[in-house]
Length: 377
Image (cartoon, rainbow, N blue to C red; front, side, top):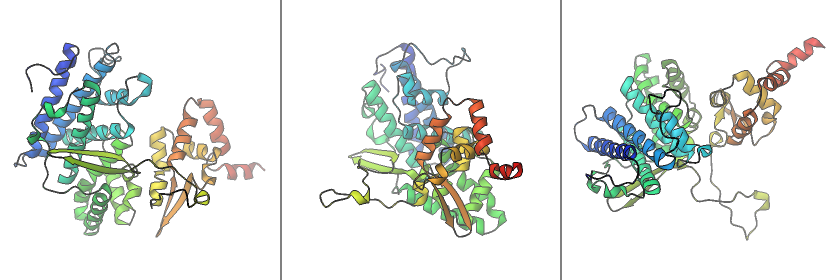
């Protein structure tokens, strides 16, 4: 690091910025060192610290009047969650993170929490993908907010390196799901191993979904058993299944971005409207990509009970629209899934809804309403 901070701003902003870069350099150094001792959790802790310091420096740069002190605890600064939410929220006027970027950094924070306070041991491939994509995002933030190039702050030789070629997320999760199935089917004594294999995958999924906390042992047990029973990984990790990786290399500089699937912008066209003069690009996607949300997912994301989510879905006619809801049957398993548009409709409906209105909808459309109606007649 140069002795003089390369950015303009308050003394506090410069100190936060400098600490961020110092922690980033140490995280990269630890990732590249040959010794495995404490390597994984040290990388996660330092990388998470680098991101938190950079978020706070960026918030002070974009909105110095609001500051970074916690309004509920004036003696403390805001935590990572509040910083990321402010960086993503358009209502604050300082937005500089997309939902995908927010999900990536929140997943990093959850992985760090597990590694620091309990257990979390992502594979070498997962750790590399997380580190390289976070470094890419930090590079973008430095350029967009501070007009500083990351390459000017550290030698290119310290950028993350990996002898293992990075596969697509789809291939990675297919293999991990197959490994977990094999371990579970090998006998009950190996279930603890399957749980630890699944833990970082579940933490990443929770982060992308914006959920707090670590998965419980029961949740991990139930999930690995579903995988062993043949449940597709896309159903168990619906948020992750919508992501893809884009890697670009320019000399010694490597960028890795986790983005929503779809690639180049395309215009959706109904096949019935297609003509010889209008090129149509199609991509095969699974039912779980089209309908990634289960009722349980919606309960968590909307903050409602299952009874309320079912009632709201019925009142809005989601179950009757094949574009919004689908029942997927795989062997003996049945999955009732909702599309992303269904989630958006439900979220818009819930915003500003009074408790009295919600109760009325539950009374009219909640589970068991037909049976109650028959009794009264």
